Length: 173
Image (cartoon, one colour):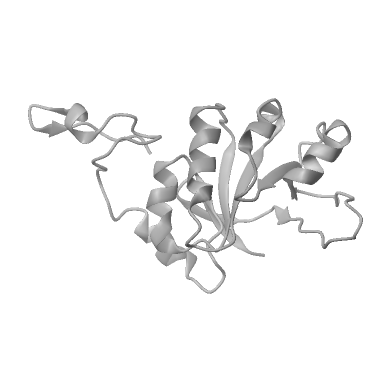
């Protein structure tokens, strides 16, 4: 079974990513499954009651289409088909800030260890690191920076606003 980083721990990944090939049936398999946004939108009336179905969003898709469904989704994953494609960062940030998503926000696809801190800063709390990378090394990289300077999803204030008389306040993780 594969593993992911979830809230600063390595855990077994119980979710399968459903990537149907063009021209195949859009049927949703049994078990914990992340379906493409198009399948969710097309079958939401049928699968919305299932607590074992989440959604994954491609970088060209609009997260606003999930606005009315977010409270029913245990997992929303954002696909990074190439590590150089940064649109997923914006999608994650929008899901957390503008649309108020509070469930698991997972980065999938070509996710490299050196991206994790940046992904966390925009709201991701789960990471499916690329298979050829050591997940435990990736987890160690999440502790590289003890205090971010800029504001982000967490903490929402920049460092100069969090510092009181030379004392840095604890950053929630």
